[in-house]
Length: 84
Image 1 (cartoon, helix red, strand yellow):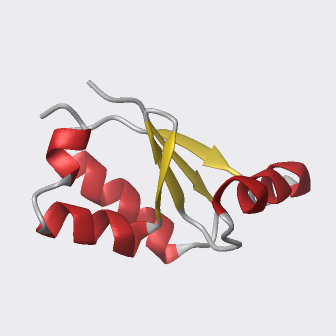
Image 2 (cartoon, rainbow, N blue to C red):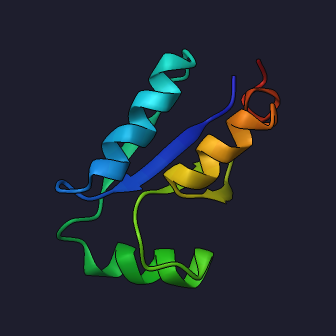
């Protein structure tokens, strides 16, 4: 099974929706709260080029945010990435 990390903030509804999507797919996720972590937020921008959350990583590869994960799932590409 793939390793999924979701970088999130405590007040982000899209972060909650991303977690729900992966839960519905039977995928466990590591939730990393960056609400008060300026260093981690800077790292995310450097790593992904994005300032928004959630930022989702599957096996160390950034796949984007909730809308990106949802689009991958709609195209049938997310489950294979998860090894399902």
